[in-house]
Length: 368
Image (cartoon, rainbow, N blue to C red):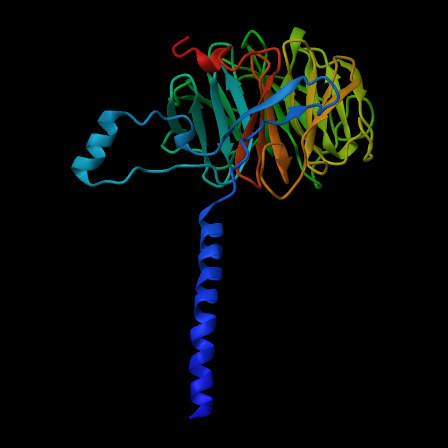
């Protein structure tokens, strides 16, 4: 009896205090800490003067499509759910006038993120323009899209809206076509053939972009000037200079339009200006050269002479802006915006020059 009485007295005394503590804890949980506003990273970081700022990331069709009132009504009336489409294993990116084309080797297609047009398209999913494994791409001055199909051993050509036009090359001429660059006048197609460890076809095949006729071959396997070892990506710069990422030789080689060697830059290493696993390449209207390094998890920017200016990005597991695990393709548009593909995080990061306002440039000019 006494023990039970003590127990009851104990409960009577402790219970109000326990409730008070619980109320305080619940109130603390209900008051969530204020979320800090997202501050876009700038490059280079302070205290240096910034030159680029992160602008956006492209992942899904929702990132560009405009969900109109009519679309909502049709969804409500039919009971259908909105289809979400996104990147699975993106590889390369090519941009013209705010239209962002991204190749996806797993989904065997190219996705168009039309930023000013607010639409999303899938390209290469139907015959006769069916893609097997798309990798590198380029857009000609007239808007035609050229896609390297490494499994199909040819280049597939589409209109800007994805209508199949023609194919260039075949298995006799191309072993492993991984990338394509179109001359500034749109007349020549420079197809990069990576070859393989058991092949001597490490070269650039030059085609007539209209007829598909093979004009010449640039380079062969080796380590001398003008030779390649597992070249992986190619781009065209001002004055139709040809830039080739010679990955097995850890350098970038530069040629004139006829394939004459001009110079190279880069050596193997982990210091700024060196390469460990170079991959994607692009140039801007000023002639600067942008080179992805998958091992570094960044891209380095060089001037027209191959001298290092700066780098953007770091290796990271967060997937946040500027953090990369498997960066691959890169492109620079007419306004100086930079588009970077990361295969691991399935994204395209976009960086804007700080001298360019967010509302300026082709991404903000629908229909132009």
